[in-house]
Image (cartoon, rainbow, N blue to C red; front, top):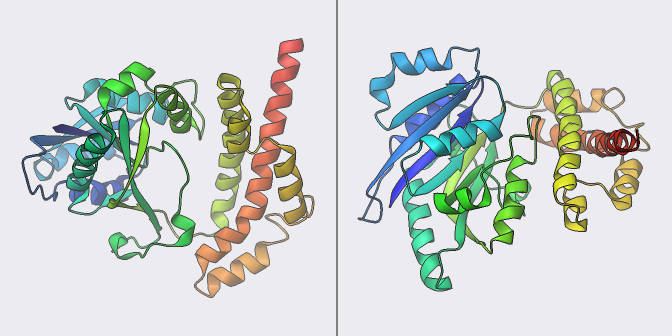
Length: 314
């Protein structure tokens, strides 16, 4: 098989360098992979990503780069697929650092899965481990908070390009943060594709240690995710999608209670969050912050849903 790794990126030059270097170190142990390429799509970065890559292109012989205006990851991934040469597409994010056996593990799982199922209607989903360790991201151990129940998420997934094309690729209406990959997953599930877990294909998702300065951006992302969640539900009006986007009475009650009706928020929790950060526990601080972040998400979902109802009745 010929594998194309498609990576959208936007203003992530420091961690992108680690991402691309790891992909140049892949160890291919047998003839299951004929070759591979890395298709990088710059989504309108302003941090000199393309200039840096051009200057250092000799260090990345597998990389082909393309650019577009800032249209979001859905459009960037679609461009990457159209430019890719491979029959197998692997999606990762530009802040993911993989191990040297990453490609081989996906290839092995795809072949083994096809033999087991007697069908090629499948894709493989690797492990994603979150880390704040920029110097040595692959040293992070697996944590219970790294578990994902997603059916199709583009942080670390391998799939035959023919199924992407048959499903119709990503919906570029998802221009804000969230849901474009899971929405495509609904269409892939309708085609009868089976998810094959491949924990051996490990990727380490780096993000900076949590700080209070990040909170406004995190809140904005949750509100965006709420708006895109309503678009997701508009396309697939099922109870399963309502659960995914947290648009149920249960979620309103749950996060309303946990946040004490919004009383526990970025202002009232700031002292304890900062104390935890000072104690060297930024991840715990982030998990506590999710109390009000999820409340913002739920409120964002219902606000966007109400806006849509009003626009339809106008």
